[in-house]
Amino acid sequence: MSDFQIEESFPTLITPKKHSKFNDVIEELQANKPKIEQLLLKNGALLFRGFPVNTPEQFSHFIETLKLGNFVNYQLGDSPRDKVINKVYTSTETPAAIHLPLHQELSYIKKFPRHIYFFCQIAPKHQGETIIADAREVYKSLKPEFIQCFQEKGLTYVSHYYYKDKLLRTLNRFARSHKSWMEVFETHDKAEVEDICRNNEVSFRWLRSDWIELKQKRPAVMDHPITHETVWFNQAHLFDFNPRLLGLLNYIGAKILYCRPSTSLHEIRFGDDSPIPRHYLYHILDVLDKKTVAYPWQNGDVMVLDNILAMHGRAPFKGKRRILTALTI
Image 1 (cartoon, rainbow, N blue to C red):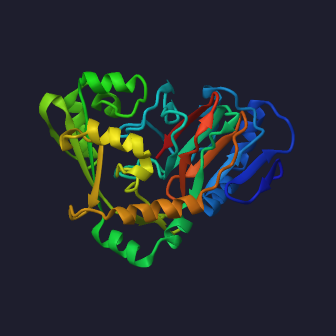
Image 2 (cartoon, rainbow, N blue to C red; image 1 turned 30 degrees about the horizontal axis):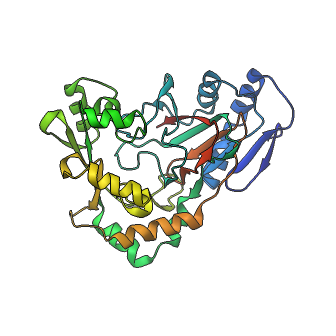
Image 3 (tube, one colour; image 1 turned 135 degrees about the vertical axis):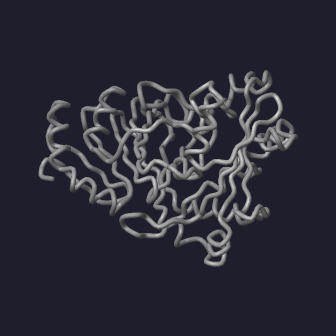
């Protein structure tokens, strides 16, 4: 990769040695695709800095050039986000003061994306990093007896999404914390929703007022299909609403809002449907905090993550911030 300067770290920083037009950079990336793939498998995260990427369209073209997989929609994902152009979305649109813990994207569904991409269109002036962590190191840092329990039992994810709920629709104007099933599945057609569930091995049932309940049984740990390294791969810590995750006031508010189990956004259990002790989930959060890497954004940055090897989240921020994202499988 003679056209690029490479600093191997986490993330691996890749910068062009000279200023080039967008089309020239595309050609250089195509010529160096094998090396880029090798670096991504080795380190899990790549940060392209100083490249002439300025628009959502250029971001999409950049991804297409890397040819790491085929674009996929954000179906079955319930983070609040907007579609910008075809297959390109805003990153999670939660209030700026909220810390989003580390996770792998859609790790609770069977057909999860293999890679996730981020593009910094407007860098925040204070914090707002897309925090990352090496999932291999997270796995190694968890208590062995704790890992064994999760490996043996697996996980059951439970979600509930509404159809037309005046209270939630009003709250979402301010916090965008609970999506409708039409937003989650990107369709208003119940038959299409059911087909998507069956194709992804998601158990579903329709509830009163056209709410839907989803259940998915997934492993907590997996081996990378190419490197064969074992990683921590789940969102157990995000599906449990607790004071540490939400903050005390938000936690109390959530307990009041979701007083009926059939309307709770998320619930997590072991695969045998037994409860997961809260201190287990706090242990996960402790390890994630210790393994967090925060790399400040600059306008035009493109970050590429192997969605098995690397976890991501978001630090709180102040001021304007616009990060776009896309997925490939």
